[in-house]
Length: 311
Image 1 (cartoon, rainbow, N blue to C red):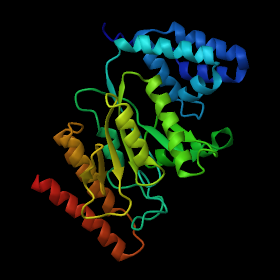
Image 2 (image 1 turned 90 degrees about the horizontal axis):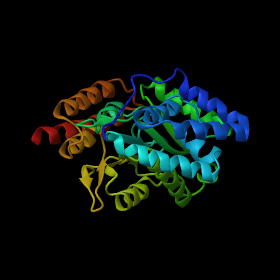
Image 3 (image 1 turned 135 degrees about the horizontal axis):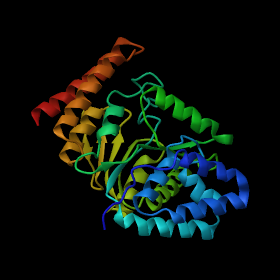
């Protein structure tokens, strides 16, 4: 069966469905009817349109928090059936703190700095030969009342050139403790797999907030859905770039991540070159607190380029 995607979707379809969430039971019933009535590529566009609204009330929130259990089960079953006709796509799932933006655990980059090459890597990874779904942000940070924290993060990332269609936040309860963080992210990941049954995932995280444990669970439990997991080592090391027995790629710079991604068939040679060029340009614009920190960052970048050249 071919993927029959319509040429257009009714204007503001996603916004209209989100507005129904304010109408209680009647709104949930209308949302359910609308999703069950959509078929083929139209359903896929409708699901993406909901997430594209850039609101905390995204697709996952609607299906798993607003719909009743019976409505949710019916919608998920319908998505699973219709997805058999969809073309495959790769969805990059990324953490924020110490993965995209330098956090308080980073000893070199100023807090809040967008890591050189990060956006370039996320935007290009997985595009070889298949469709590329919008970037999804998976964070343990609580969304806050009315989604204030989530919307703040959306704006902060957008200002740095990070396009996000979905931001899956944690809760205050899930943010307390390492095990709770992993459990919260795992729930979000399972929900994402159910909502996008044809997508395959590339996970990008760091050595804090349970990303390593989450990646190992995902690679073990969903080997046919998770293509790769990349973990940023917040403290650089000359032996950083390596792949452990579970298949996780540990890296210090996004040049290293891009090198391994190209070896895995997730980046073309042209995209690899673009990540390197973008990383170099963005690194030159970082205002480090001390000359020693700037030198350390430049050393890590130069070593990554040397490894690429040696290959």
